[in-house]
Length: 118
Image 1 (tube, rainbow, N blue to C red):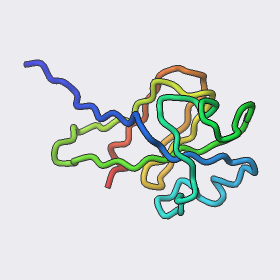
Image 2 (image 1 turned 90 degrees about the horizontal axis):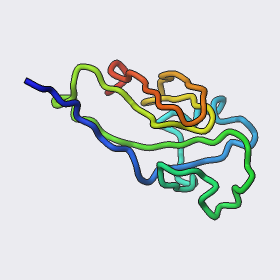
Image 3 (image 1 turned 180 degrees about the vertical axis):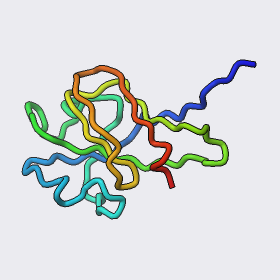
Image 4 (image 1 turned 180 degrees about the horizontal axis):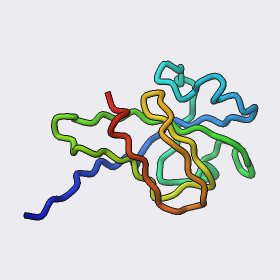
């Protein structure tokens, strides 16, 4: 019998915040408790240059944030967060817990988040 992995697309609207002063990690912007009500919205997949937020030419750190739910009763034993690519590097958190990093522009990669889900 063939088994197919269930996939949930996270394409669509994400919250987005520039980190000009490199304070996001120190202030724990990765925490679910962070007030992100003033963050901008962008669609993924895309690049922030496509939005009229005065970001043309910005080269620095930014944060993306998205809430999603997984039905743990229907989830497979291993749950992976897959990226088709990012420009240029990423550090990632799930539920406030660091899950890993990746460097390399526009190359696919994934993180096993099975033990980070609530």
